[in-house]
Length: 431
Image 1 (tube, rainbow, N blue to C red):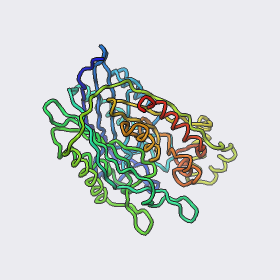
Image 2 (cartoon, rainbow, N blue to C red):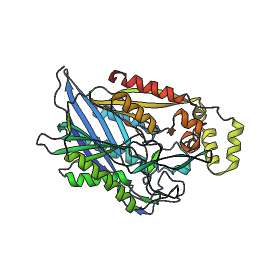
Image 3 (spheres, rainbow, N blue to C red):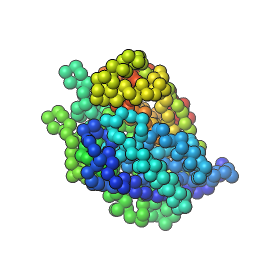
Image 4 (cartoon, one colour):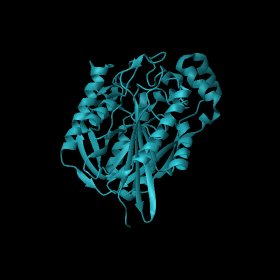
């Protein structure tokens, strides 16, 4: 089948809130943010290619936000389809997961951050404006791929005194891969770069807006590359990995200086990869593919249990009220959505709408020989998605976090097989 040249259009839109509003991700904060340390952006990449007499468009957009609200995805997909001809399966909206931005979903307990309806509307409008600009800037590109390594994070699950805790575990699993994709214009200059890496952007818990270390890396690279290049940080499966800021066996919250240092460290490695030999990839856009994995819960709470939790106050009360106010939350399972976008036979992206732990990302890479890059925090958010072993071990990712995301119960260990079956369904042809 004959294919035309791959076209790429990009845009970079400022999505920093115009006025002080609450930030998301840390329960120790109160009130609106105190200032802006680093501005937030949405980076939009629209791909287009003709094949067999038809034209296909794919969208990969990245936001300096904590997540994209699941409840907003249907409307966003509808707008993308009607205005730009981008199908519902041809979209990955990736959040780099900064905890220095506003709450972008109304589904969770207040302790994770209070959403601001005006900002949510402005965010949706900014995304669509960025897509409109990107479509107007479509031009031919070639695709180049390289890989490096960088360690700014550490595994955060450690067994202490027979109990799973959130503590630095240098012996735990970690993915140091820095995958770099470069898109060159016909004159050889760089139009865009994808930076794929896996580490929580939780360097600092201050009450200031910040794009965190991913934003530092992206803006540093945009400045050094020049030519108006747009650099998108694509967050991997980093549910159980965070920045390696610890002493005496405990994590500590860093400063903006630490944010800058980690971002520069990552940018340095990307620059090294860009300066070296990279493999050219023959582009071949394919229709996006979606799968839904129904993740079962353990025993659901009774109405009496929920009413008792409300009486307890605090986060338990927030959890109880959320579930009592919406009976749909008491279903025996929740859907995890997986989306596969393929730019070529040698480069695909598999995105999931959860805080996916590292082990699932490693499974995807092994199954595809590294041809498919795994992404969490995409196209919505359901909460942490642990492995069967982590559920049995307990701890934050395996059990405790569900309350904050207003999930009715911990996941059943069977979810691991369900998720891997869904992954296999999407990427089976790549074996």
